[in-house]
Length: 254
Image (cartoon, rainbow, N blue to C red; front, side, top):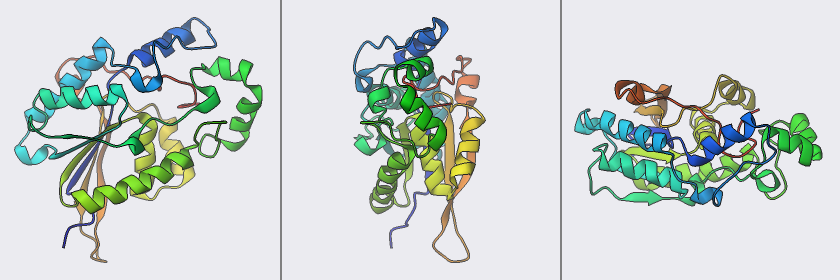
């Protein structure tokens, strides 16, 4: 019988993106809007982001074969695809491993708040800012966008697919900050308060590793055990600068 869970599961946030850099510049300049060069889905990695993905690949390349992924899943967003491709090309997994794009791993949809800084949300969408304050990020859904609950709903379906097709495999998922956090919420059976407390401790670092392994339980069905969260060892080992920028558009933090 095929196992219900992967043997090993790694969750990786994409490397620093040009959108992350643009967001920081907008905040420093006190601007309402982020100067995005393309659709969010088409925002590429920054030069540093490419170096971070390279460091990640090199770090896995130095490990044993059994400690490398044999399934590579990815958000369709360009920055995530580039991270996965650079990781693979650097030896993080076998060079012929297919990159499995899945739209359920996409960035959280921000709808009407897309491209606004925190100040921009307060000044241009005060009603949404107040609703967000009252409801919290877990339940607040901006017009045309998603709440964390909406992201969790699609990720539950994603994990069903992982279990059905990749049970017993070594799976790496390359996606986005909110996706990493929401997957933790599902896999570990956390509460709203618990996952928001983890989020409040700090951003998920670019190209950091969150790792699970399968563990047997007394009930016999097994579970995924968290081994490490938000680990930046690949960048430290490669002497590559570490970044933990919030995602490019408003709403990922705060």
